[in-house]
Length: 615
Image (cartoon, rainbow, N blue to C red; front, side, top):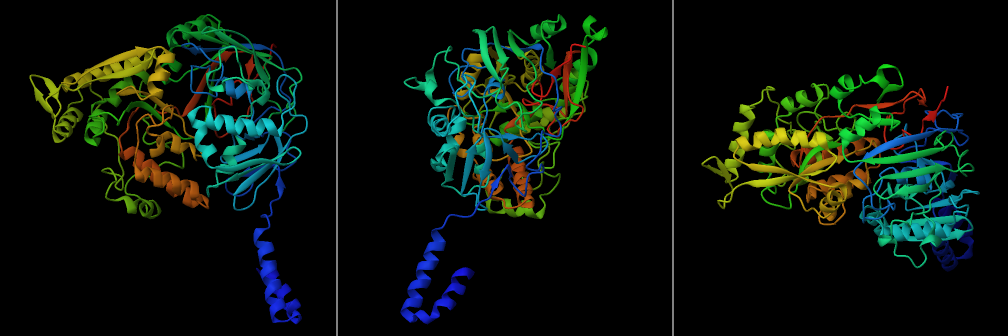
């Protein structure tokens, strides 16, 4: 209002009535004027992007990597859909990372930072109430047609209403999306949420014209969505393989966030019945690379001829990202897992030290929280003041040990694990369970039984479950595993038709709105959501809101650590071990850059940054 005041003084000679009228008009004009926003090459959640406007390539990429070569990757299970953007069907998980692009791209070295991809520049005010993108000249779909504002608007609306449920939450927070001038699209939000400007930059863009008169959510297998990415599906056989070929004239080859990436001429994804068969295929030379998630196997199982003679190379990639959560998740929508005492008893009965020694040689530490292995993790012991202040309004409903700091039980590593067994028995007794003739019965006198739902290809998880079931049997609980194919597993977990199941949720150094989809109350009964545990906690919801509303890094850290505390104390998951180092075994011709980004290995690391060296 300083400008208005100065102008009012100048025009005081207009007289009192003129003075009042002018000042009111001037104030109104300035109040409704749009917030100033500068056109920039990238945006960060807090502060400015690390890379300057004229950067040529990402710092961990080999910008001049050679193009060429063909590789084969392996998946377990099968697929019955090639549309990765809808709920229906089972899809090859790699597709959206290779075939489609967004308005902006991530840097694996900077949490909360995006740089222009389909958009060459953006404008966003300090309030983050809106963001405007200018589409990059020359951006094209794989069929050669240009990417237009119409495609952008259609993609946001269609994914937000007919796409996978994970896209729906963002759409409800968009007030308007419109073309402001040629090649410019502005998205205005109806919610004060700083991360929304980042999220819209990552929404995949599809070709609108392809879907005229077609049911997007229920399209047949042969309706493969057209994207602007470097690869397109050029061949497939349902359930057996998918071949992706790189375009020789890919439009974005010299865009800074893409330069030096996507170097293989073709990538074929073959499907195997389970992990053991896939491993044998790799040993025989049918697969070019595979990720190894077991430290014991990494140390002992790579003594086959192709590894011994140097045709296969073992590469380790360290990272600084959170552990995420891996383990068996309990469905709290169903009794008795709606009782925290029962969930704690299930955790006590899981003899982690013995199981970890059996499967990894104790080489991998246990997951201690959802964000362990990172600065975002809850700190041990009592909650520090900033975290405690956030949790204080919910003291009456917080699960036990939230403020004190929940810690997982540790056994002596013996098979019987008697101390934990006694603790589990005590907790079940407190919850009203009794043992009659060696059978654990619930408060209604019904035997305590349940199934552990597993996907068919997860041989190691089935073996872990077998050891776990032995411990549960000693408590008088009758448990069995139910193994289903990938399509059934996706359908069952997507509709929450299970009691306990295998769970893996990767988390990043930039958690945000996706946390609502993972464990927010609104997603607990939303089919297709990632909230498998059925979390409905006002404290969890409030910590997510505090995280999203944080104005600085300190506030964000406190809110994330508070969220971590509540999730751990709720005892939703029986945690396994961390994957603190990425392990990739590959043919010697596959090469990678020397510099490792802080995110290490992941969906956008291999094969994206690697190349073929036939020498």
